[in-house]
Amino acid sequence: MKKYIIKILIISLLIQVINITVSTSSTNIKTVEESLDIANKYLQENVLGYYGYFKETNINGDEINEVLAVKGTPAFSDMPIFVYGSEERASIDAVKKGAIKVIKRPDEEGIPQYRCLGYTYSGDLFANPVFPPDYPSSQNVKTLNGRWVKEPWDYKHPYIQQWIKQRIFVPDRLLRSTGRRDFFAANIVDGPEPQYFSDGGSVEDYVHIIQPPTMHSWGLGIGFYFHNNGQNLRYKTFLLMPFEMLKKDISVQAESIPVGAGAERKVLVGINIKSTFTEDETTDYE
Image (cartoon, rainbow, N blue to C red; front, side):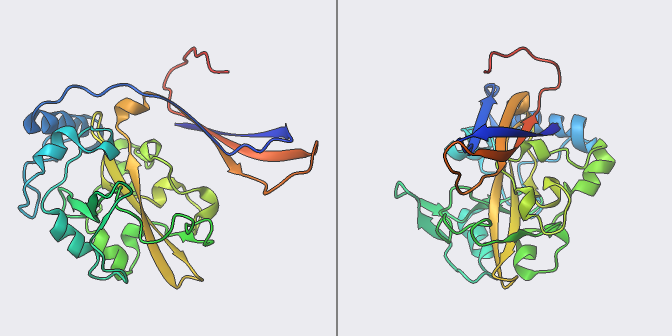
């Protein structure tokens, strides 16, 4: 993935966020066995070098959720995700060392949602991306002047450690197996912004891969940030889109937005353009 930062002058215009996405449809998966086979072949050929990472039971003996392994959920565009064990048991584990003990609450449509969907193959907690947040959306890393925790998989904090037990897909291991520390970076949807990094680095240094995406299945990541002068800690989950959806994808995002501008005054805005095209393409974007 190539990144370009373009400085442009805009007269009396404040750009917020522009996202242009061209995606392709998933293969028509009908059974758990087929879904696991496709995912395992992708990881064998591109990441791990061996076949059989995903199985029908995880390392703790929890059985795979067959429905999610074939059809996922609407949050994952009805594409496969591999989750094991009980939503309730995983959600209880998730709050053992947290200040808020809620394991289940209704979403905007009144549908009860558990905090976790279950566990990963390696036994980590698999957060539910549609679980209603513990705090209002107006409270976030930006409004709270928070800072993302770098390399959370190595951070000695009991709340973080209860979420992260395995380090199979951390950047240094990916570098050894794929030649790239940022192998999954382009898959991260709306990842942490650099201005809120605690200690430099890149996005892959701040998002722990709970479950890796494959060609046709979604993955999930999690990040943590401190606020209130380091006194409070919160987490945020990040979807990792399938590689099939990355084949032709362009996103444009304003880096910093002025809070206001007078009429006819020039405003300087930083723009990040991310492209995952691997070859030159002809488009009709204007």
